[in-house]
Every structure is written in C-alpha cells, then in structure tokens.
Length: 296
Image (cartoon, rainbow, N blue to C red; front, side):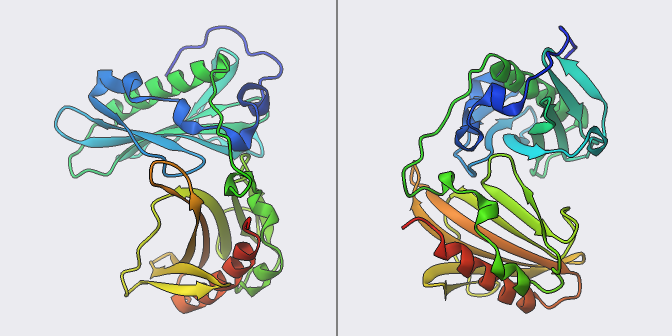
C-alpha cells in the first residue's frame, strides 16, 4: 500500500476533485504505459461508461485485467471491510483478498469510492501478492491524477444515454417484479446505474438498470433470443444458478466510438428456485418502461 504523506484536507469530495461525475472518462485514470513495468500492458476498449481496463500479461503468460473507475457511495465507514489508510488528501482501503482478485478503493471525504481491481481470469495462477502489487501501483496512479485534477471528461451528444439518470427511468414497472414490494433505490454517483431492492442492498428480488457502452449482445437461439420489447429489438438472456434466477434485457441505442454502441441494459434477479421465465416476464416490463424514455 502507498504510505501516507500529508494530512487530509477537510473537503476533498468526489465532485470537488473529479468535476461533473456523469461525464468523467474513466479511461483517463490509467494507461498501458503506467503498468508496463509489470508485463506487456495493452489499453482495453471501453466496456462501460463507468469503468475502463488495461490488460497486463505477466511473466508466465497469465493475462490480468486491471479495472478502474467505478464510483459507489458508501453509507458510512462501517461499509469498509479493510483499514482506511491516508494517502495525501484522500484515503485508500484494501478490500478482502481473493485468490483471483485484488481490489482497492480510493475514498473521498463524502464517502464516494473509486474502485481499482486486478483480476485473473486466465488458467494460469498468479500469486495474490503480485496482483496486489499491481493494484497498489494502479491505485496510486489514479490517486495522483485525481489529486492533480488531471481528470478527462466526455462530451455526450443530445441523444446520448450518458446524460440520463438511471434511477429516474423506472417507476411503475417495479411493481411487476415478484416480491419487490417496497423498492428502495441505490443510485451510483455517476448516475449511469441504479439498483432497486426491498432493503436497498444487493439482496433478491432486485432490478437493475445500466446505461453502458460496448458491443451489442448476439442471441444464441437458446438461453438468449431476440425479441421486440416496447417496440425496440431486444436481446433477452436468462439463466438460473444455485443462488439466483436471472434475466437480462439489452437494447442498442446510438453509436459511441471505435465501433462500439451505447446500450441500455435491464436485469431482474429473483431468489433461487424461481423459474427464470418469471424473471424474464418482469425484465420485459421494466425494459419497456426504460426503452420508452430513451432519447429520440
């Protein structure tokens, strides 16, 4: 972990350092050249409005993904599992270690956090100490750029979903989600995501809306199919696992950049044992409300 230097100032909120949160370009926080000391580093294409990534192929051939940028709002310092360590005018917290992931959070004084993680999806094992060494360095790179206010911003067009507040897009259709009787919204600080559940946490039943960028999903004719939802072509994907029954609806909006598209993605998660078709029926109701509010 980086060592503390000077005492924190009274107000180093996310907005005071980052500026307009919805337009922050997370790909400006870390570049491949910042991580070349750890291996072959390559800038990744945007996969979200909220985070970006750099891949690092380390000695031994494992390809690690360094992800950074997602902003979340903590309710209190009790939300943090690790120790908060001062870093200049900010703080950094280590998240609990995992064998295939090492994560850090940059913490602003308003308890908005900016996540940095190193994840190993390859078949080759990488010691957690090595992943955390990369995570610590990447976190310092992000912190230094944030403190210097070297933050890049996107310019969204009039029809972009980047201007929308996800929590404002869903109202009546939440009543169609089985068991979601008193939905409480959790809004991500940049506004591109919103989650609804009965307790405001990630428990089921829950619904989520994400305005994103990326390559549109292609149906496989089995678990994912293309349907008309609310007058828009929509890919519906369903799955069931031991802990959750899950269904996703995705529609393509307008071109973004580098051949990517803006996307609107709705998901509904129901408790284990619930037929996936029930989750899909609900996700179509929510998606229809969201699609109707996309800029024309």
